[in-house]
Image (cartoon, rainbow, N blue to C red):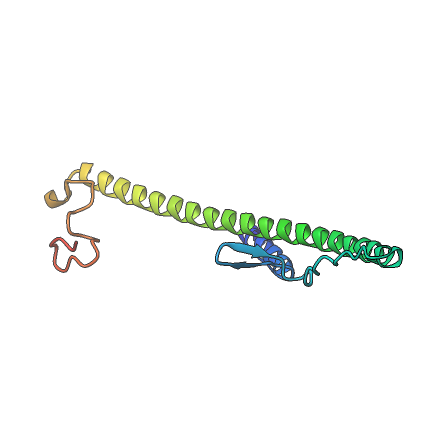
Length: 146
């Protein structure tokens, strides 16, 4: 039951973060859930009225930029966390697989080591290590497969 929880948690996190995941295009990241960043308004200083209107437009634009920036940071942090969680999950999986394979190999060596040291064993099985050519993918009938 512990393993199911271990694998379910990163998956649930990935789903939660995927909702706000940004886009990576040719090495450039951009948020996908923050809308489009509007262009800065032009400042018209030809008269008192136009400069006042420009300042009002700049103030409004700065509020929009601040909201966009906060959204972008939140999304970037979520993407960073999702990447880290995914990488950690994959590392855990291959480390567990490696540990299991190594334990299986050690158990196999131990089994044949015990058999070769017992009286009345097959003299052809005196080597506790792997038989060359056995378990070698593509080796056919004992020859070198690589």
